[in-house]
Figure 1 (cartoon, rainbow, N blue to C red):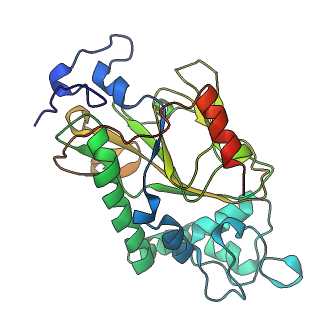
Figure 2: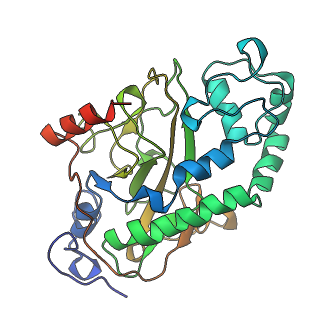
Length: 308
């Protein structure tokens, strides 16, 4: 099924597939992945509640709000001896410079970590998050990507916990630098809560432009950008506020190229990420919101996002 050609934000589609000779992608895709902040009703998905359930560790003497999770909860301002249920949280503490207690170090061994991750797939809390994530892609993302046949989307998304730290969590890169990524990708970055100051993602406007801006967001906004072609990165988080976010990639169904690798494990993926399909979708214009991230509108966003 091909996307219709129409006016407004749904202006391109496979039927208008003029290809840009430089980038190798159709012009309509460039329109549907230009950098943009979009507003939506995040309460429909309850990201904060779902993430709080994932990060909760019953054995700890206290569990702080998710954006204060970097504050130690053990005796004498130390980490508690019992490791968190989710290994990603252990990596976040280690990245922030904390020494791992003995049981934490054991839980982070490759074999143990793999078993823990596999067990997570069957955890009701994790399954609830994935169910809402799929609904988010189906309802908010796929209809805005310009292809009525739907999208192939990364599943599960990459969840990130960035505690205050002297080290950045994401080095400068573009996804094209990594194997099995493809030119038709569109990147989306969704914060759980607000992001501001030096816990923002930084992106450039075009390949090699080197005009990086940080992108502050509220809890009701997400970022769309061309992460395949354009570099993006973070800097050390000095805000005293743990940034929690998830990000993912989609490819319009008509542009998705299946891997021809003899290794079947590489098939059905975007890069190294497992992927699923939405099926046909009803195209619509992107909701009203902040269209760009540069200039006066961006400055207003940053000013408003620094308020607690």
